[in-house]
Length: 496
Ligand code: UDP
Image (cartoon, rainbow, N blue to C red; front, top):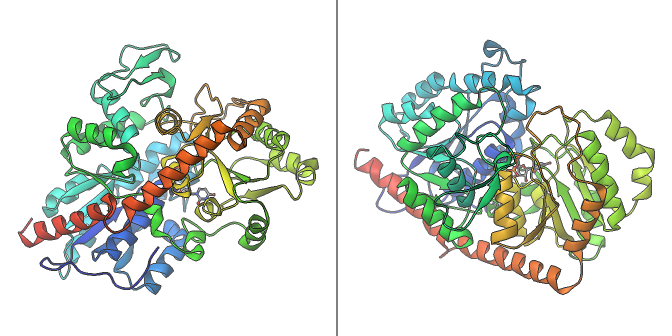
């Protein structure tokens, strides 16, 4: 974050007031905290809607915006967990114990409609000029209409994956296809794209997803535009096609993670780190630049214990230095036992394990990191792109498979580990999708010193340069942020 003062109000228009309503899931909230900073740095006022448990995770963010004097206010609304059959304090998707509670969670979110409306009505001194809502919060549509202000949606997807999703759902492409292994050509996609049914949208088997999806799409059709955490130069073709097909303005304002310019704000991003960063940084400082493989699967993926052991054995066999994040909350006594039973000793001085929340952005940006084994969540992907680090793609579910296509086939900045099927979110199935040999091969292919791996590295570095260009003054995303603020300010001045 620049976090450099109170922002420059743009001349000629009143200060636009953005209300940000993130989904309570790390992969959705984190980019919105970056968005809040960017909007405020460029002169807007921001109200960031959250709930008590999530606000506690955002303490670092709150302290940073305060220290920088940015006009960002955290607005805490009571989350009615108990009223919807959720355990007390269950306020984030990563806290849901069973996917059967997904619908309860979404209904509890929708119950925020009234208190949010009441709060916004009270803001007479500085009425909101625009709502930027996570796409999953379909219920913010009514609020925007009642207040007579625009509503922009944020899906957290890149342009490529937004387009796949839109085509599949709005054309009912999967309607009569029963075989999960059938290869499907995505009709109307601007470049040839074929995928197995199981890897396409609409196959996430979470009870209640269908109901939510319909409401989301109804509201998506009514929204006033989309915000995307990507940049034009990365995927122009797909972003333009998405704009044409939806007939909506797409504001590419990313990569938003570039607002972090110092280690302190990176370390506090999303949550407090579960470990003391100092020994990790010391170790990273001591090894050869570009030599370390960073392994992290985001905040929601449920990698099975057997699969984690297999992954660990593959990393060990690769003989490359690594940092491996094993997320908290997984049921991992057997993994813990296995780690303690010789693994950590065998990889001592070469491999480090982080259990729980890692300062991912800070690690990825370290010059020692030369490869990223990722589940291809879009935030992780764009963070890898910004760091100029080539990737090993290991998608688990949903849009992660389409992001893999973008990384491997379009941008050519990564190699697949070779995932054949979906690890459903919340699944209890004890499967090994990827063998230790496949991990070893992928790591060695990516970190190799030969020409092919070098070309991948050059392309990754080139993407990082383009990302910075887009983000900084004179770049496409920089201009878009300013135009967005100006447009919303002008609409407000003109009376809606
Ligand atoms: N993240 C992090 N530390 C962790 C795990 C995740 O900082 O230990 C961050 C990561 O940098 C990214 C976000 O959490 O910004 C995860 O979003 P992504 O879209 O990659 O995946 P999701 O968690 O939504 O599957």
